Image (cartoon, rainbow, N blue to C red):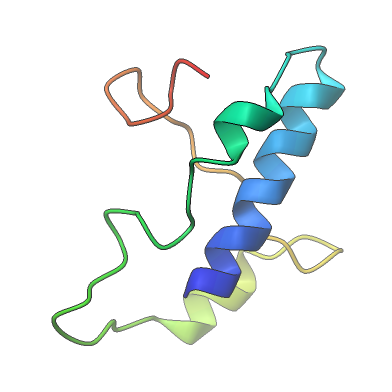
Amino acid sequence: MVCRHTDDMALAVGELRGAGREVDAEVLAHISPSRSSVVNYDGSITVDDEHELARLDDHGHRPPRAAGMEDPGAGL
């Protein structure tokens, strides 16, 4: 799960930078893909593999999820 989040975060940062947004390396040094609401340290995670595989693009990436302004990091 953490590896998946790492890839998602790298894609999001690349997309922001590609759109001309400044993403400060100092800020990135303090975020972690393991600190997420979907990482459950107390149990297991059930994933619908068929559904998730159907969402992948030609490069094997999931589409980015739209962040609401109340989501952590939305103001980056």
